[in-house]
Length: 192
Ligand code: GAR
Image (tube, rainbow, N blue to C red; front, top):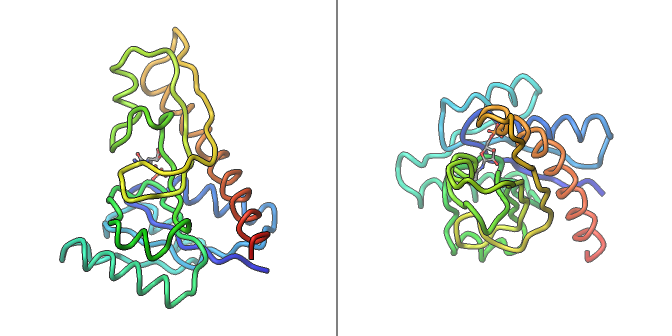
């Protein structure tokens, strides 16, 4: 059974790319049906196109309802099983989430519930705490919130700068999202 997923991005799309490459290298029965962005300028759209994946720009310029209607159309058109948020910087409304309960995943560059929001790495860095990490979770109607699937700690070393620390976070993200996604897929396929 092939699981169909759609991926939403807003920027570089390195997490999206890492998932695509894990699927290819493991020959996993997961099909990335589309990569969509709220921003036409998102560099990840070009990456996806170069790999032969369908792309779309969501009409968020016309407001959140139009943007989410765009996601819903893609969901139905491709008949996806899961929606994967990979650096998608928009809050998904409760209405949308409740229509797709348990079918939307997100990654966040901090140990949720700590440092939610668009600046998880910077907010941790300014806090002076000694470690942060990466969280993959099921999406509910609150920002960067919902049942946690996997977390991995990343320790701030004395010689880290915010740049080296950020690079460590991204390296962990690029492994953890696929691990969590794979485990979640096996749970939902066993239930089916
Ligand atoms: C990632 O670090 C992801 O965790 C973060 O955006 C970045 C996207 O990078 N998401 C959030 O902060 C969600 N609140 P990418 O476009 O290179 O994958």
